[in-house]
Length: 181
Image: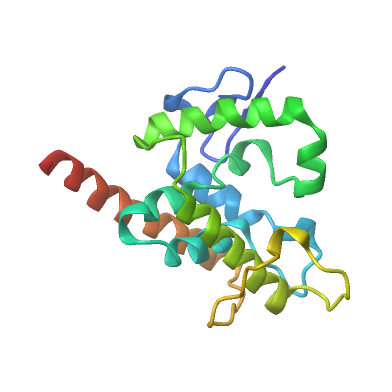
């Protein structure tokens, strides 16, 4: 068996994903249920809220891509980065899912550098605001400063609704702009 049943009742094939299997409500729900840092933060902090933070750190024209940058995790889960790097087959499956998501939302699968930069700023901010103090440096954050704002974790329900609303807003404006061009 290579498929899962999503919250909306859709069958999502992990090995042969396609755009019609991707559902915005499933993404919002699943990402809001998944805790960043494998649950090792000071409070519940969802992947959905992380994506909302990243969205606020990029220029307007890249906000849809920023909001969706971790959408694969709605289908394959949120593995901690060190484990993800050790599992090349996982990465291949994740990339197939990413391409299905990109096709569904009509976005380029190659994300602009500003999203990677914003993701690191969000990570530095999360480390400062949500993680236990620890003396070890995070090499991936060398040269990256946290944002000026502080993160206040949302409830699962609030993160789900905020993510879904933002996705619908961005889809409406992005697709309107593309149609007008």
